[in-house]
Image (cartoon, rainbow, N blue to C red):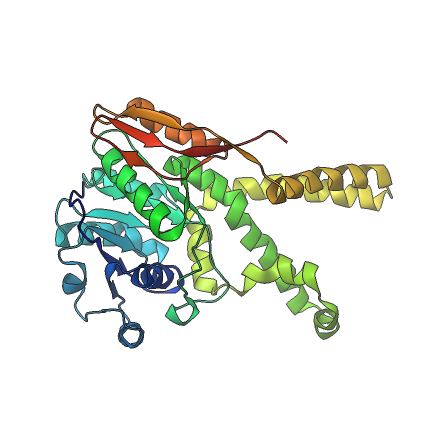
Length: 339
């Protein structure tokens, strides 16, 4: 894809809210030749006050770029992808940061753009929004999903993997779009529903002010994402509606089990279920990894390479880089050890 040995990367970020703004500010801080564009004129002015070029014309912002990050609202990304493809050269890598992947990946396939579009999703954020909430360190070290496909698109995936590791210290998690959306439903989207339910029940309660007076870490941690702008949350949930509903059904089963055990004063049953929950929490906090490096031929159809990449991500592993040689591509990778 991008083949300018020794040259400075030229990037653009379209949509400079919380995530796009953080991508923009990190790349600017790292010395990348980066431009930003946002449909909001005040946001463009703010970017310029921060020292980042932010042209008023979108075409000017993305002209002659090696990579363009699509960071607008989730429902706009498929159309934006097609628009950006028309505005940029064929060697320009396109990627997005949306919280669901199947719809935009399908648009790329239907539009013949899989050779240079790599669906992406950095797993980071806050309950605030806009460029004022963005920061160059927000995405540092984040798990960053990228979706590879066989064929020419693998070249864009390789290049982008190296860039994200170098600039963001990203833990690149390769996944198919379908696998991402299934995993993200339970890892990210359902927590927004549960946080909204708890915070919403508190808001409706006649004891609201007393509850808030006593609220400590468990309430604050459990409701943090309820402070996310409602439109952003709604876009995310509707964009992955079927999978979120499936995972909510599974969560509801466990809630019913807990309620039944509580109703019958079943201390043993309650203890068993909280021990199970605690095991997941401990695994999150104390994960250990082992090397799982692999090499593949640089040329060919890349089918085996992409199959291994997706298996790595589905198993909880991630890439720590990508080294592209004349004949071989090498992936330093880590895979979680069994608990």
